[in-house]
Length: 94
Length: 277
Length: 258
Image 1 (cartoon, rainbow over the protein chains, first blue to last red):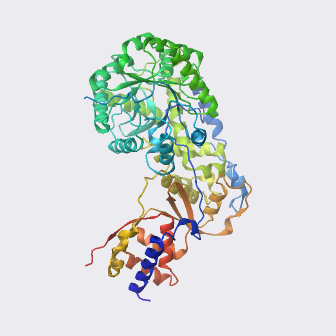
Image 2: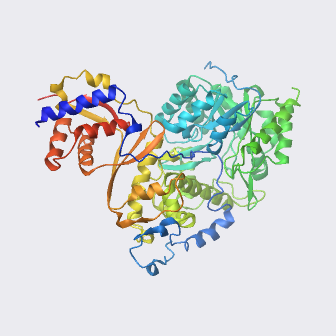
Image 3: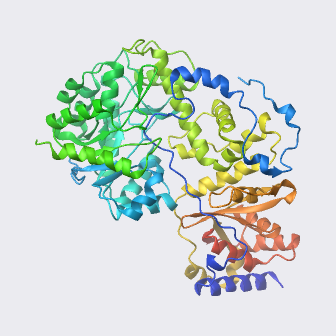
């Protein structure tokens, strides 16, 4: 098929199906569709998260530097760890 | 400037509406005078704006900004202002407010509400920026007093005097955050009565109430707690001296179940109802 | 520099860069010292940016756990100052940061996951777009189809890992119980938004090749012929309908013929 024929057929099809309303997302065959919702992050309060108080901040920030091995759902993914985790005891990187 | 006033805000209690409560509020439509949201979370379209417009079908909405930086020395962000104007056009808010604070200067952006010295230089600077915002939006801006953890040696006036002068120069209104004043009384030794006496009462269009935390002797404005008895007492004093105004309960972290928040709003409503101006 | 700007600049440096506090700030308060106050502001700065990152990268938070994410965010914030007063803009270079971040070297798919999540984040907060008007397209004579320049709203993500499947397994509606294998292989994904919904859909190699040509500004004729040369099975109509269904076709213009 030459270029013009390819374009005419494809756009013709797009217009026919689109204008007829049949090209809706509902019958979209290959789609993985998930709604996500986020809480907006702009707010006017001071933070409690992480370290709450000034005095604790110094103490906690030291402690946090030793929390250096990922400990979440990554453990469930087979083949996800390419290196032996013994190497990964993180030095204090400050 | 002759600006339409914000008298659309109903003189009743409202809540700061946050994401965890969107669905429940829309499903149950609790009896509430009005709600307030943070502008910047609705800059853009999609789910946030769609949700807010649904809320707007049932409640008056007040738009409360956290990112404009009225006292910033970085140029006023015209894109931010245009986004706010688009949001106003879509939502038709009953009030628009911003904080008396800064968040960007000299190439730095600090995403927080920061205090600054109350000098004549700052007064002209902030007044010019409020003029620009009001001109762009074509309506009155309410300016909120700030909770602060420190103060500046060069201040030439109090925050209350600064706000009063802003009202005189720009015709802006005042959003009086009673908890912020209480925080400043404890942290900085601010004189609450002097603040209440010096601000023009007719310019006060809205009150805020919230809970704070105490960290190493410093009251931190965390909005994660019911309103404390001391703040209720100050609110009652304010009601007697300034009069009832639309009053908002703010709760931004450790957000409770909706009925808890509504119960706080009901407590404010009770005090407003018991107050005879 | 004005006095006010000077004062704010010093205050910002004390918060962001940990510099000494200016003498303009009053040193003692009834119940605490100035150091305490500055530490509260530093804490707020970090806390706000941490929360912004957690909002933009919810799957990475789950993958590495809250404690490690706090550590990771702290390092990110150290090297990446905020540059926007809208918190939703913070975190754009997470993928590059993770690629060089030694403690996650054993999770090689993490940078691609960051790219995917940032694309979702940007799509979520993007302005509403009016979809392409098919009525206007119908006015274009067929002889000019080759000169059409299409504007699209989706972002193509290529990964050597099955990041879309990992992402899917972490959406709240999904079961906590999942079994995935990194050897499930590479993928190409389109992140787009239809109404309120951010969608991640798979793209074939040929569709991705064509779409990236279109997104680089090539005309429909040139992009299509070059894709067909590489992938003879490429189906233009299916690719167009796919974009239409994702609401990723937004507008078009005509390239002026020379």
